[in-house]
Image 1 (cartoon, helix red, strand yellow):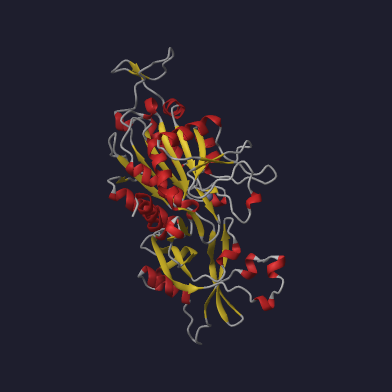
Image 2 (cartoon, helix red, strand yellow; image 1 turned 180 degrees about the horizontal axis):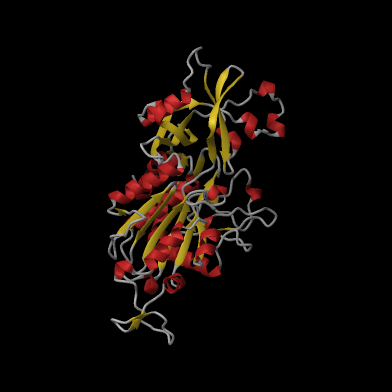
Length: 457
Ligand SMILES: [Zn+2]
């Protein structure tokens, strides 16, 4: 097996262990722990030294970092961003409905899902359940029911003769509820779903209060195509980028700059949430690190300005304020925002800008949009291309057709919020937002080597 196939198989394992954003954060945490990173509590002091790594989780967000050998005010941050969430179907709070002699489950659409790709699949359930405790604060448990529990059947062609010529029209409220069971026997009043979830969480049904649950495909991810050139898997957008950023952080040696990986939740629904790229948590962490406590801070200014409002009287040198430390650290920082890119589709080639047709296994893609739906500019594109050159990795470029609306990602949001120079990149893929997607197996290790190089500059 080649090294690039082994890395693609590692991605397959990462995705299969991460059916939801909350699982993805947990899978990432397990890998960080195994690599010697310290699990940190945001509400307590961080006990880690320069050169060491730490991380914390909040819902579907994981933020991991390795402190630089120099404080951020001198060497800045090297930030890698991606997102843990993917479009899917999620259970409503009271989902059980009897319709036409079946027990069905009411679902909401999360993000821009391609509805038809969820039909005729053997679906399980995954997410987190919240349990009663002695206090009002619930206990949370992750569950993953990976067996075929429900199915959204398509309508027979005999009852919808025009479907192949006129297209399939699905109403999200009416047509997406999966069949879950036959009606309960008379006298059996306990919710079947509640019993199932309580069993999965290994508690009595009375302890179960609420949940965040999604339908998940039970078909495992795999390499495919002749010579295993492809990865067939759910959630490649954007767990493939999470896997790349995390693998790079784990592989990179400590350097002068502080290396940070932020895997955000809620990109598919706009990012303005506590765990999203438009939330405050990563900015708070960077400000905290910029103050320099692990390097012996609060930092003394080694290059004092003429006005020095805060003076450390013991050492007669000015102290940096938090905002000045942060501003100076950000001025020395760079950010790679990684989200999957549209590869050219051989059956729909005309959907691509003729001069910009990234192919699977052609290397990472730099994504540009002059209207700033992607945060890339000439300077940050040049940085990424130079990193690819140094890593001996081919690079491709994407811009959307001028007559098509461009997608967006966390780059403009996190970059705009933090004021850090940002490039938007991603590995090329097909079937984006489908329940099952496809990317190139050989691109997986290429993105990791470029990101690893970035963390060291
Ligand atoms: Zn995405």
